[in-house]
Image 1 (cartoon, rainbow, N blue to C red):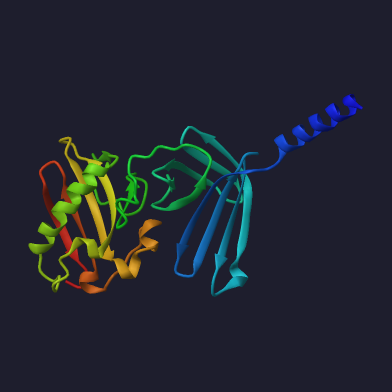
Image 2: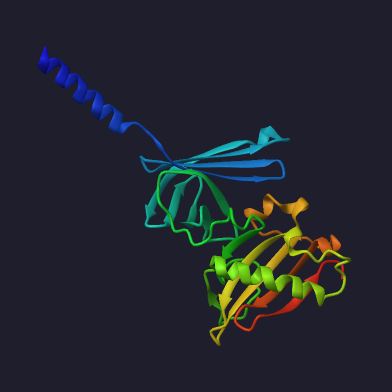
Length: 237
């Protein structure tokens, strides 16, 4: 009898070890689209694209992944190469990120975006779209102190620029940042801004192009080393 129960519990233990459990859940929510992206302990993933107003386009993608340190590579229905950092899964192929909702793995966190709810950052890469820097630029990883500097410089830049029509409070804007170091070793940041009420959610996930909208949309560069701004462009100006 004892032997029977020993075998039973050992078998139950082996079965429980083989059960599929979720390691990471991440998502994108934007304009009627939700992407649910999950990684499992058996090195498989499931991604679901759910369209709120056009369910016929809904799809489920599946495959395998490899995770080495913070580098994530997916194969199968969804080919992806990216990094897990700052509580996001960020693509190395384009300016796109998935926000991590639940995770059982540790990742590199230099910025707690709960402290900076109007900011998001993307890693510079010359092969990506929206390359606003010269050929000698190299990636720079922003810190919380850098975001505080940007926060202090932005209102000064806005006050020196026409066409804002009184919208001179930087807290009213969602801000996307791409940072580099130039050939002189100076930190330069491209900052893309939109009125928070318009783009508060989607701005976290990807960089898009808006051709109008007036002072609700503007972009500029900030030299954090020299504490100055340049290349300011306000939509519709």
